Image 1 (tube, rainbow, N blue to C red):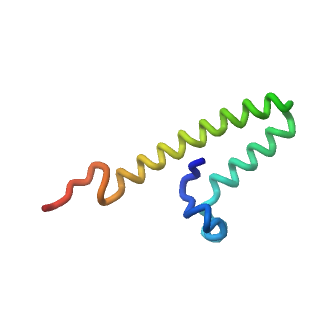
Image 2 (cartoon, helix red, strand yellow; image 1 turned 90 degrees about the horizontal axis):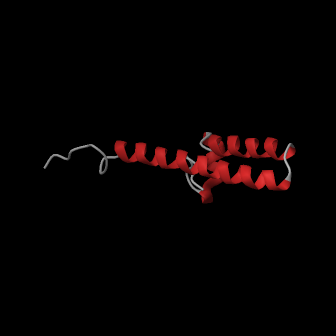
Length: 79
């Protein structure tokens, strides 16, 4: 699962300290609230849709990061 702005799964405490785990916390809150009001089948379908949405957001964030990087994107190197 791609959560944008996370440092690493190994350093989750840094994410909490610097507030870079907000997308993950928002995701968990949405899942928890939705599960309370759904049947088991509805929960599974909801999680599939939510995972697809989260992955799409991660792909967009990755593309934006690549555009801004020094080695990728639209930047031209001076040789």
